[in-house]
Image 1 (spheres, helix red, strand yellow):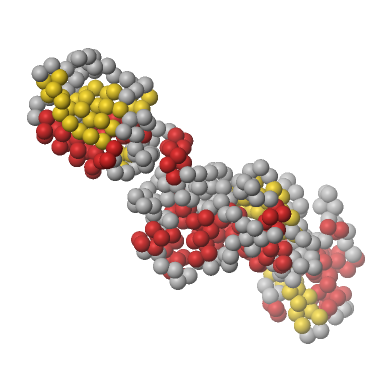
Image 2: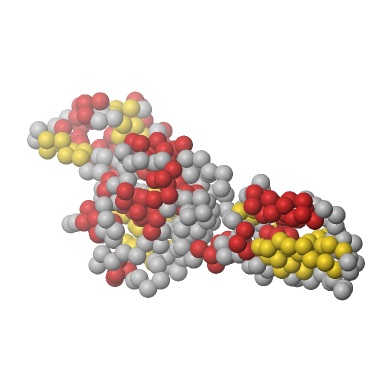
Length: 437
């Protein structure tokens, strides 16, 4: 009998360190047979103490390969040319990708059969195998990275009074039935590979940056950090009417919160790009990757229809009471702008953009080249600021010989025209030139 190596046959003189790699490759591809005691030219050499070697092979399969491959393999001794050799039959496994326990689910631990060789699988190939096994839902699929920590998530769950023990992780879908971390776990972990990028621009275009920041870590940490950063740009100019101080935020906090949550919960994490938050003088844009789920239109969204792309993540955020119920986020954004200029929702093939208008921005005061028209009194106030660098409302009242209401109106106009910046609140409120702040 002559043996010949092929895409389904591997020949080994002895059991060596590469043996597990061959088993993994067959299990991940089309199955095959490994003959031990046959050289690479097909000559039968035989093997001493076949029973001991069979036990060694069984131990390799049981302890050295994950997920469990026992039911997809058989190990037996056969006699060829009056010599004992071992035949290991490997069927294609039902839970690909299989990997070496000590290497993990990465190219150095996942192998496939290519011709007569067992070769490392690329990360793209590993992801495709995971999709074949677990379906196309990203957050349900097995994570390539199984070395995850949850320092931030544990503190976050504790703060919100939600248990986060091992069994809770299983219930939430962070750990699958085979004990592997899912991509939902990866997103909540400190090792999350995605990020949120925030940029603040001068004016209404992208020609001049004021500041930029990128946030990493668990998506729960990114949520907190990005919201806090955006809130720093949510100015709160106020006017005094009689004895009442009336404040007007640039953006409703509930709208900012919902837009950020929607971008995180519903984005397509199969894309490696970041969520983008662009802050302009007149608006904030939240750019989430992935567009709408197939079969859902923007009209459906407006009517409260919801089909989450990441059901596990949506459920976790619901358990944490970060979202109230499915399909209501867009409606709450619209309701927060009742009686004002309405938000926009722009749908692309691979993007969903939420645009929140600035309540306090007046397009009439800014032209295309960012120049502004100033009243005589506004020019006087700027002249005072050039001299003193920082002023109060009282300084303006004394300068113009007026009461508090006209003084406040002038100061607010200069804030809206991007000429000055308000610092502090109440009696401690002061104003500085914008370019000096």
